[in-house]
Image (cartoon, rainbow, N blue to C red; front, side, top):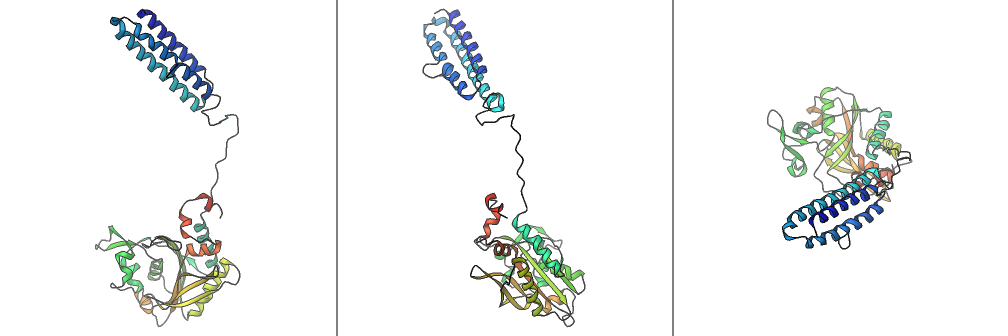
Length: 339
């Protein structure tokens, strides 16, 4: 075969391939064109390539070079046709069934997370009971997180195993900071600046290196309540907690106190609420220890007070019959859209 004829066949093949790929209106017709021109067994390029063996030896380098150029050009034309269809250039718009004449789809609107919903409801309930909302930092120093709360340096609650200490966050004196382990730090900050009477709640994230399970998580939310005035008693504490629980959960909710120990309250109790035929611990409470009152400049002979700290997640679980706290943080829309 003469070199000129072989080159002419390649030029004709390239022209035909470009026209076929450009005319393909959908992925099916494009695939038919691909098999016709680039098929491994019977494609037209394969047929023309077989003529290379009939070219005179001196002309084979030129013929082989042209063959490679045409093969690359046909392959590029096919890939460009694929891209055009995927970008909406074909009738089937890249096989995704897109019809540009149809009306657009509205973006699905989200809603408030169930924990945030619970926090807002708790603020409203406690506001009706005369408690205002106070806020404080999540990164704390040892004074507000431990010392002022009557937690001595040797207490195991200060252990590095039970707290998230921040090695890079230090005060001017070189004292290491930590992520607060309780919202009780806010009551200290409020009492340092506010003379009695005081009636506040603080809500926010707290951090403890707990192993995540159905009722524990290393980051969770607390509601801390504080009331300081003349003549405050445990009866006031129980009344507030019962009104709080019945307002949130509805009906005649049963709560119970179990004797316990906390460095910052005396006497101290664990607060349980009836749930799914049993009792679930909601948090701790008690009368403020006189040492805590003295630490903020209050006179324990003049005023008394109570404090309580409850887990917001557990309150939300009680309300909605959720059995695993981890569900709130898995970002599963199927779960979250129920609330």
